[in-house]
Image (cartoon, rainbow, N blue to C red; front, side, top):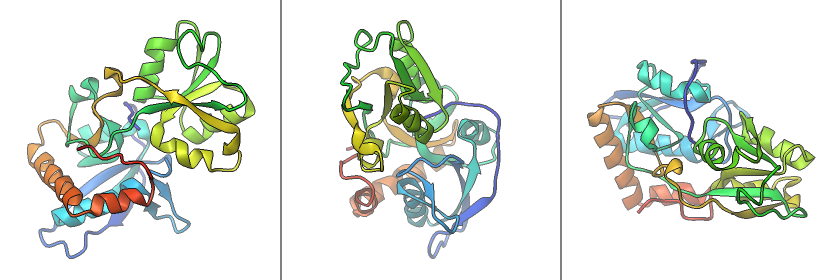
Amino acid sequence: MKKIFSAIVASGLLTLAASQASANEKLVFGITLEPYPPFSMKAGNGEWQGFEPELVHALCEQMKAECTLKEISWDGLIPALQANQINAILNSVSITAERLQVIDFSKPYYRTPATWVGDKNLPLKPTPEGLKAKQIGVQSSTTNAAYVKQYYSKDSTLRYYNTQDDMTADLQSGRIDIMLVDALSVEPLLKTAGGEALAEMGNAPNDPLFGDGVGVAIRKGDMALKSKIDQGLDALRDNGTYDKIRSRYFSMDISVH
């Protein structure tokens, strides 16, 4: 998803060495400490897995670079990038006009709508009028949060969460009435224990607040790295690697054509 700024909480480096890396360029990619399955999560051995860690690995192989993942709190990712502590962020950061003022992006590597999810037995119309006096959950410092604040804060109560797991728990316990999440997270969510009680309630309409897809964040003006990443992403799409990785985690096509 897609977040903004605060203090840096650094952790260890997890190596994703590119196979037969010949150029030996060393790059550090930031990854949020908070798991965001199926985009990123930790295996039992502590290694990162999921759609985006796999994509980092494949991209670095394509670029013939040695890459590491540096764990940072979600709202510390962009400050870490600006402070030269990392080279890039491939971690569901949406391309928005606000962010483009302070960082640059590669071309987008996925795009999905925002989807409303609620209790299937309490159908709600997810409009400002339909959610009047309701409790709306949203993950903090995201494009979803910006959208909900813009259009729903006047007549609804907004509750902000650090993780989607916490937000889902509150939805299932009735502490909130509905939540707005990335569409890609809905399918696996509905398959979890307790997820059978939830249902999709429609997508949010297209809005500039959602940005122009999700790209790899890089420092402002780092056009050399942007060019390498753009070329690497194109190659992964052309040779089928991107779709092979994507299909392991998502049934829907999320690529940007």
